[in-house]
Image 1 (cartoon, one colour):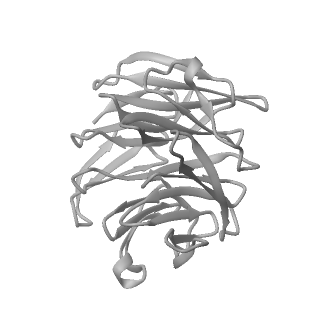
Image 2 (cartoon, rainbow, N blue to C red):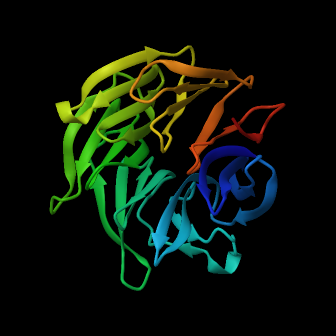
Length: 287
């Protein structure tokens, strides 16, 4: 299995795994402890799992997951198969990323669209609208300050959306000059991972480029910690951690021979990483 995403919840890490046999995708959600040891797993019947985030419903934490079939599902950290909910379909292709903020769940898809779901009084999520501004696959979405969110695409742009508008539309469009694989946000700073490297942008200055650092392999994932440190993983198995408000790398880890795809922080700012390739395929470790 290949880890595609991870999220911290309920004192554990949850890892979305996907694999393909012929033309069929299959997936598992693995629950691991603080040391990366497997405690339980759940098999997804809707295809591979591609992305994860946590949502709060009535004071209870649930996990939202995107799938290769284009659906978004909700489940509890207990991973009880009888309590899995599929949200109303909104995409024609794979859901590449999910994010949650202020009672709104967002999904990004390879069908070039984003979708938003609103939390209803009864705890369900209702499909709100489909959003289209990118011209190629949307690979990433994240939330940030206020009622804005950020999307990144293979069309070499990052877009900052304003949800306060009656019909949300991009307030800022940033040209990245390379396909965007991942986006993350800390306050007014957006960091992106692209096929060329990692970049920082300041939303207070209409997306002004603060810094760009090329990498020897494509950046697969970028993730800010609760303390503002930035973790970066690359296609050659390297994990970099940059100190807060700086482009100085405070640690570099080269653990693997191939793609290090998954990064996630817990509330204590402990970093979790997953790798695709053999002989470490499916390995998940805390760093």
